[in-house]
Length: 164
Image 1 (tube, rainbow, N blue to C red):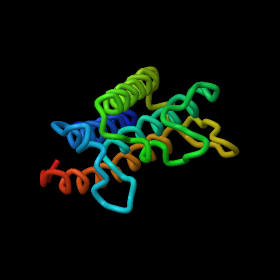
Image 2: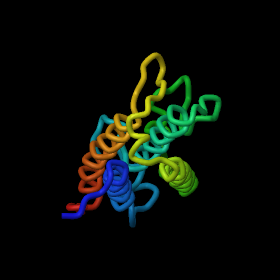
Image 3: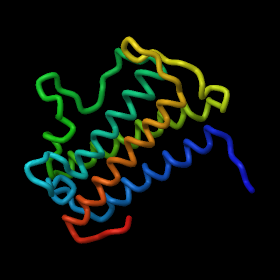
Image 4: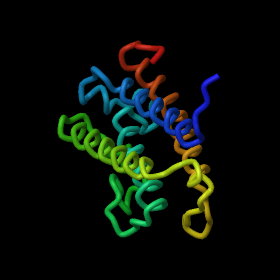
């Protein structure tokens, strides 16, 4: 039996779901990525990529590293769903979303590279509550897993592809 450490296990699951979302977007045009396949919802594959860039930044930059003054990706005080409502089918919008998502993943991975299993119980401040690194990583896996389920359905509506 091969065993891995706690952090390695979390990173494996997180990497799997990040790759799953990437695959669901592969081979689609900007218009297809922005398509809201389940009206009246604003949910789209492009919106999910933008949302996950925001989520990666929120947890890994703001909570874990305390970079609260840093600009948050895809935010607008007048539109709390801007990740989705402003996901439009242009090459520029797609390029920006993918670049910012990949940037946030790289920054998160850099932070994770400096951690070990002992760090999983460390607590961080989120608003007025404390959360452990373990809780945040489990939440990130859950967040990706839930949205990958959405991505499966969106992709099937777009071109019929399933099983990704």
